[in-house]
Image (cartoon, rainbow, N blue to C red; front, side, top):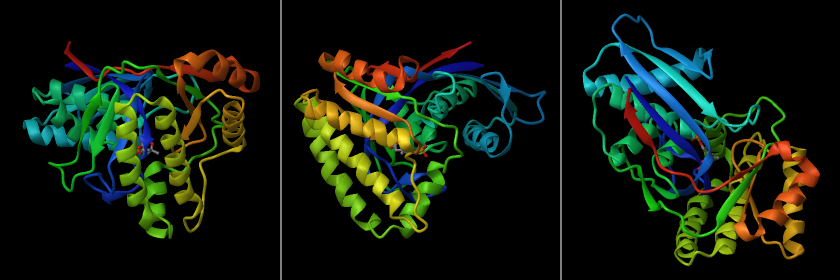
Length: 323
Ligand code: PMV
């Protein structure tokens, strides 16, 4: 029996599209910030008595395709360790209730950590990153704290994350604006596939990412939060342009997403530097230097209310322990 705690991450340069669906090898590199406020704690216990894997998330039994994704990762661990027993998986997602931020990144990183340890495997962080990748692409990066790069690679051996700066010692922060309206969302898996195969703009995406990766690494080395934020905002808009330009086109934005984007631009026009980014859902994360926290927070609170805002700082990498 073992437990792992992993934090979620938000990409500054997005992963959007796979080269290999089964192994989850991405089309491009990507780069993220791990956050302190959102994490998953997962305990795994392999038990000979069980006839099937049992997965509980926040006290609710998981079924259907979501449970099948967990069993898929457990099967990889069983195959590697030579174990045949089924597992009891008990997971707590520490995200604000109804946030719609429940992240596959922290969930599959924690599952990879706990399952491999419970099965008696002692994996390096690189091996853990590769294992987490088999559950969900963004989970590859959640093994590490701070600023993290996922190198696309070309096969299972070569596709993993590396830390760029685990202890972030400058003032970058994010406010997550929870604008989820519980609309049925397009899964990232489907959304990516649709973009890769039908957007006429997808062919330039790898060039965009290569440029943004080089620029954001320079900006990180210079601890230039404005530059990091500006690159992240532009990269997010270009990623979302791939959904709008797919056939049929779709979007993850809703009206609150657009409102938040407008407020961020207005703040900037008024001399308060901040930048937005969005993933495969309507929530907006605002990037800024902590010296601007008060101004950014109060302006967002006036529109959305403090209940829908979470201030997050850079967070740590995975922790794993035996129970
Ligand atoms: O890991 P997935 O399949 O949920 O995909 C994540 C995709 C984005 O969050 C939109 C971008 C990213 O790099 O995290």
